[in-house]
Image 1 (cartoon, rainbow, N blue to C red):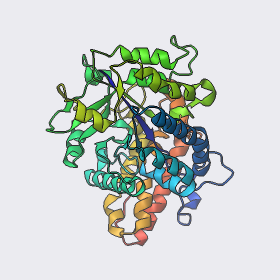
Image 2: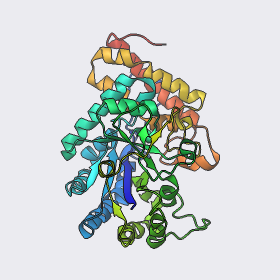
Image 3: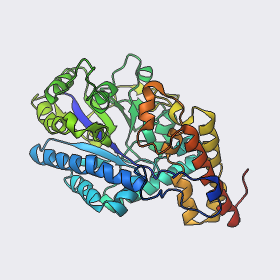
Image 4: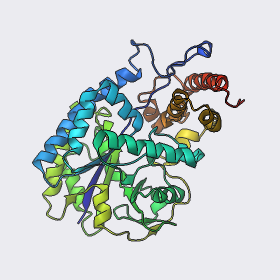
Length: 404
């Protein structure tokens, strides 16, 4: 009896504007690009809201009304919640309406969609706590299952998250992690006692998220009936099918004219035609199914690119220099006790900044270019490091420590 777990990541960063060296020392607004720039944060949010968030939320609310058995889950970065709270209240209301049904779960994550776990466990814990408070403020619920930034996961992440009293954690079901095992079961992370590990079925997830509109794909066109048939094959060979993807899959990455919304509207009904199928949130999966075995993941895995490792964010010298610069400021930033400096420092931790500095191209290049306001990784790096240089000066003016 496979329980289908639909999970959607909702995130848009505060992108660093094209910030030249001569702005250092007087322009402390690193994120507000000119109003005419179609790749500024405000324009991108309006575009994604129109193409994805509002129509997809309407479709999901209809599905929740039509099918009492239907469930889904989200995680929102704190930075997207800030943006929609300020700039798109109708979007926030539409998400709140989904959660109010009682059949939509919100997961925990780092507030700033950061790589903090890799550099500062203390900052990681602070950002997770900030995120939990924001979710409770806006939705009235407390996250119980955790999803780290970009599904970055290892045994160490699971152990830390267990200490924070989460009952479950999500990860990529990468082949090199699973070996002969199936992603369609729940596992126990190595070195933990209570927390459960839910693995993404990346083949079925990517059929929707990436291959849906590819006419050269042997299974194009993908219909809800065809996809449900693939899910049905898991009967007897797994307890759950975890479909994890960016929410922008619907209407943004896969445009409306591809038929993606019609696919979404028909999918639950087709899956529920099989009497042994149902839907479940991550918390419901954990309550329903016990871990079948321990899974040892000593090295980091993520859901990014074909490598499914950390190379999307720390694979070259530009990224390494930028990461060292921003996380090396932690002690001095906190010493200032200045909420504006601390907030800017945290917004500069968002993983997208380093993703835009990635020099990997070929198959992964189109993905790295999406919503990217820069013409090259070097331009992303120089704008970012100029902003860091200005932040450093602000810290020094507050009496913080100097950093070279």
